[in-house]
Image 1 (cartoon, rainbow, N blue to C red):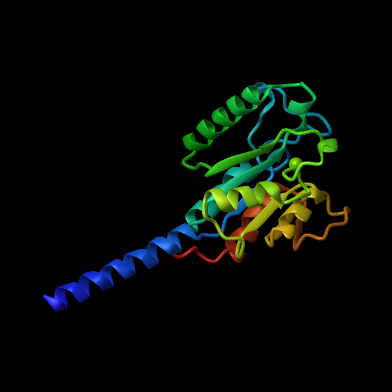
Image 2 (tube, rainbow, N blue to C red; image 1 turned 180 degrees about the vertical axis):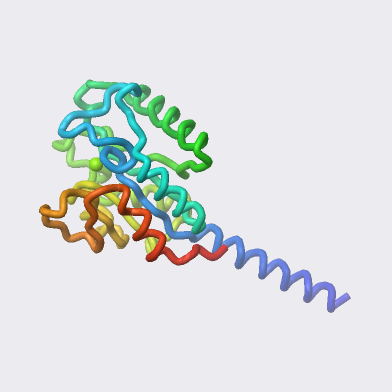
Length: 201
Ligand SMILES: [Mg+2]
């Protein structure tokens, strides 16, 4: 009887440890415009018709997923504050984006969006790390081993402020403090393949 109890206790401990490991995974954070979908330049993607998934993002997401990491999108969408599109429009766009991703066998864990004006001085708009912190807390993720991938230095600053490793995707002539600097989303998968250790469950 004692033996059975001891064994059951051990199994419970083992299960709890496995659960804690599961619940404390690092995360790969992606900016949206210019990373997930083709950049609208200085403008905003106001309509789903103008949202075009980048093949390099889908390839990166497949690598991240295969290695056992969740992926989260963190995006500044000041266009909502400016009245160019509503938060409901934005949610609908992200709903359709995720459906399109699922058709390709992948998905993201969540999407965090800052819809404030830059002048609102909120805690969520990048370069502040607020959205990353929100995601870490909501999903019990850990910053150690997490990455932030973006095309703006604001993404790099937000990622570094949250303790993430960073990749900047932009012309190589631009200056960046990112750990990795590539010209195209098509170059991101190779970095992730090499640098991401499989996330043990
Ligand atoms: Mg961007």
